[in-house]
Length: 182
Image (cartoon, rainbow, N blue to C red; front, side, top):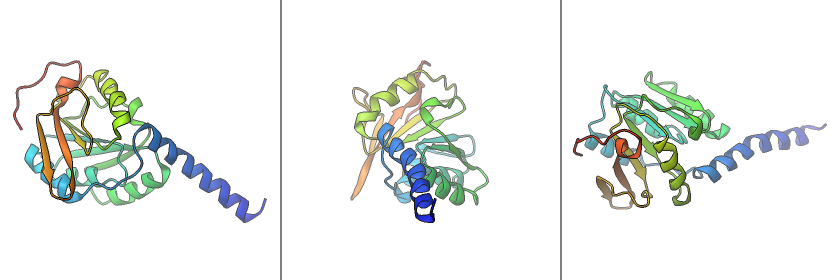
């Protein structure tokens, strides 16, 4: 086998999981840190929170949550983005990037969940969250696309930035909704 063939095989091994991640969630698209920071400030993210990013991409959400004092982790399926996120999160002690399909993970320690998924995958997200028991759940932040048939607590809009929809995370799980306000 020559080097070119080996290179092609390695690239396919990296790109197939990346394409799969795009199909079951969303293709990679960066989330603006300024927008993340704004919504996290509005929600009062701090040291008592555990923020989980369901589809961590380059790790920006996890890193921003950690910088605000929260313990933060995210799941990423794409080996390419996983590598980038691991390197970026290595400098933030409270930030962790985990390999894997978030639909197969337990997020029972979360207080806030963040997603940037395509509209076609949002029903699967609702089903996934309905199967989770999250005792300290506060909010779900959905970037760009809302959940169908669920009224957000608040929608944050900025010029030239996609909206962020804030939902009561407890309402989306099997637990009774909390009475906190955004």
